[in-house]
Image (cartoon, rainbow, N blue to C red; front, side):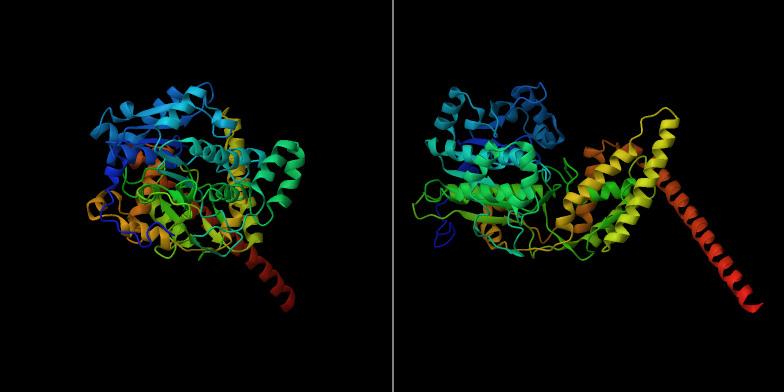
Length: 510
């Protein structure tokens, strides 16, 4: 039975009341979604008891120092300003690693979590499409298994929210909020990754993942079955976000921490280094603002956590995606990139704003050669001649590799059903709507993408607002230079064609 079917929510507490006095355990807290989740919980559910983050030592930086680095990011600007000291008094690092057996926890830390935690958000994942199968399996599959094993020992667990992906079943055209059959045995997959050498696995991976495009989607699909096998035993929900991008409103408009989705496209086009995109102009892209995603994650924890676990309970699945609520095509994104670049140009553009969609692979690869590779070689040669480090060909190589990894997603269309996603928001009480109600259909695309590009300019490229005047002047120079060279080029082509015609007519007449 679903959590909203035949439920009377009259006596169910408000969302902040549900989280009041609760201890929360979060994996992936240093990531994009994780940071916004922590910020929102602390800001809107300040009376929670505490939050434990699973953090490992990284590049010689211990978990405590990494926790400080997390809080120093712009994501927590609002919290620092309006609720200073809350983060330091309520958020604590737990030394561990989601890819290790037992999560790499010490006996003391495991006992602490088992005895204190009420709510678990499992957000950590390897999201790279080209990760080797063993690495992806360790983080996405074994990590989920180890989290479930921990959850089984937690004394007062109210809810376990597993964050998956809407693309965990891309072998289907229509993806509903249901559990589909596994593509492999997850236990066997872990055994294979442990037993077979890396080189052999690299060769066998394409055959093993079968219809799935990469190791990320494959292991995320299997991880859902680790969760699903424990239905009725643990209070579990699965949230499947689509492509999570910059914030709509909270903690402030435009907060972004990665180049995923339209921001990456707009930045590459705005810098003039992305000239060609091999995709379908009318391809609908399913994007989810990170703050709407986080509100939904919190709401699913509330709706599951306020229901007593019954052995007959299923695992409710939520496709956290726009679906039919909001449509943005690839052509829309490119058009907006060109429009926004006029208003908010990027510093040090290498050429005029680029980005043209083509459905022809031959045309695309010719453009990549002529408009990506050759100019990169030319500019790098100039940089080398002036004693500077060449860099553009390396950037273009990364863009090309990234496009290859994304090609599967840029040429196919899926239909995502999100009835459960909508149903949860309708259950949110009137007093909670201000802080937790979410709508995708009313997001103004023009305002949203403008703020997203401003956020990319500020938070990703570290470009100051004061440089906007000089950036606009440079944009104009690049525009004039580009148009001038185009006129010269096409004039020469027409002249060349005219000489050929003139020569041909001369031979014909005489």
